[in-house]
Length: 75
Image 1 (cartoon, one colour):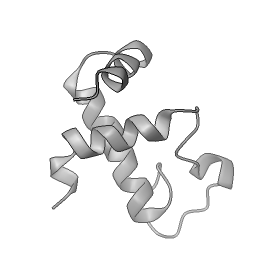
Image 2 (cartoon, one colour; image 1 turned 135 degrees about the vertical axis):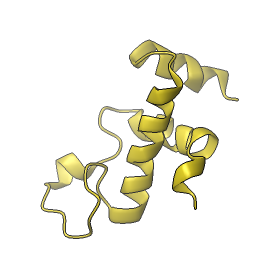
Image 3 (tube, one colour; image 1 turned 30 degrees about the vertical axis):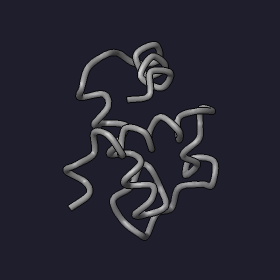
């Protein structure tokens, strides 16, 4: 468990497990489809929207949650 990231997630969002799963879902979509908002390869979002690190630090939190709470997406 990374205390620094856990505290950052709790500060930005809340302490709910569902929030961590939500972040993991966005990381899974980004690594699978190239966009954190779409479930398809045919995404028409701009490059700014596709960036997983907006706001700064979001990508690190999302990757951490995927690694620790994203078991359902790793199948």
